[in-house]
Amino acid sequence: MKRNKPPTSRRTEIQHLYECYASGQTTLPACDLVRFLHEKQMELTANQGTAESLIDRYEIEETARESRSMTFEGFLRYMESKDCCVFDQTHRSAYQDMDQPLSSYFISTSHNTYLTGDQLVGKSHLYAYVCALRKGCRCLEIDCWDGSDMEPVVYHGHTLTTKILFRDVIKTVEQHAFEVSAFPVILSLENHCSQEQQEVMAQYLISILGEKLLRAPLDHLTTGDLPSPNDLKYKILIKNKKLKPQNRAEDASGTEIEESVDESEDDDEEDEEDEEFQSTSKFWCPRKAGPKKKKEVVVAKALSDLVIYTKSVKFVSFSYSKDNQSCYENTSTAEKKAHKLARASGADFVRHNQKFLSRIYPAAFRTSSSNYNPQEFWNVGSQLVALNFQSLGLPMDLNNGRFQDNGGCGYTLKPAVLMSSETSFDPGCSQHSKATRLLLKVISGSNLPVPRSGKALDPFVRVEINGIASEPRKKNTHTVKNNSLTPHWDTDMNFNISVPELCLVRFCVRDQTGFLSSDFVGQYTLPFSSLKKGYRWVPLLSRDGCSLDPASLFVFVWYS
Image 1 (cartoon, rainbow, N blue to C red):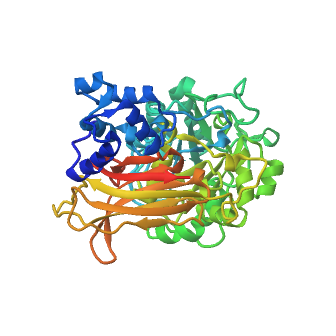
Image 2: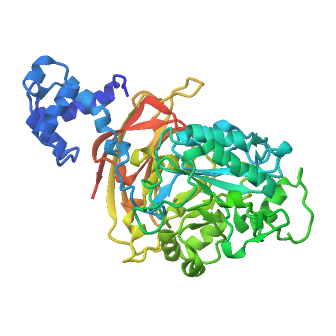
Image 3: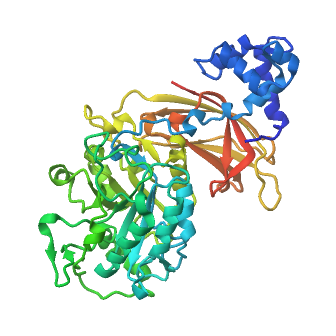
């Protein structure tokens, strides 16, 4: 990424560092550059070879290159390069162990993927699937309903959202599934179709996805339970209900059926829709009063046969799952119920998620497609924490921040604290191991984007820690008046972080518009584990996740 020449204040700060290590010399020798890398950047493995490599990359003055030293301009280019970004550049590629069972990973997951707006009158669009996949999403939701002419459709049922064809959704997925990641895609079907149209769905899945569709268990697994992301590279899995062989029966047409409660995001959402969704959508889809009757779901064998490792089952209790649930079975739980479980039985939730996939989805009352904070459910190890990707703000900033790790492949390995069978971890318990102390000095900013009015900003920086609930949440710098180009804060912030391996750090620049009001300017979120020590620049992103380059912050990071 080419970076513009930094403004005077940034240049002055970097020049001061340069002069400290050049010790009056006209250039910075490689040995003193090594000293700077060790003492300030905490690059403890750096040696003479490292320094000379940086000189070769960033120094353009021939005399300095020949003497294996760096001019200030070369040092400035280095300090403004990706080598000095706050995000560890080795995490830009998939570096984690990808041979663990699927249950060992956080998996980027979308809710109501087809929607581009709200859940009442919003538009459904194929491009929403393309956008999610390009953001590294690996679990997509498809709400399937009977359509005319035996063509299943996708939309938010019982609302005025527009409809798209199931066939076109699958074609879109086939084209874009592995554009940014080779690791498996899970299609989570919310299936409301008749058995006849389920047969059509199955045929489309088979004919369109071809070899990409996983149709049978793998012969050899890396692990003994669920397959790993590496086992399933370039494969698409179907998540849906599956017939139980012992309960199969045939109707007059020879179609196998299973009587069960209809799975509209599982039974949890059925209850929630009665209480919350009905009241918001009654205007155009009134429902009859009285208790809701359990419906008989007819599961077409052709579709059931495509469910291999991701069979949807109802969550009963952690003890029931421990005794009865197969590792190939997974549950979906609404955020309200999942929140109660996390608070009341955090350690049990963590243990459950060591073996089973669990999906969390937004409450039905979120008709505007708003999102919950996903951190609470990552804290208990839930893999499939589903968010409305079209809705901008903190929850999606956290999601994008977490999944930029590991090369943006959509899978990040859960930390050891969530996977240990030796110790019991409860994120709601205040008794954790010794806290990590994080020191951040927010030094300055540069080239902050001005609003449409053209008025210079009154910027301040808010640093937010998103981890377990007991940790300090956020701290602000003071406000600098009327300076978008070179605001200078030089503000120290201290945080004690109990479980840093679960933590996300968010830098947010805001414009002070009143005594108690401020507007969003830009933000950047990253996992604590990807945070580089030393003098670093922080890129800034817009509300929709686009780069605001050359806008950035200059910070100093230390933790121990």
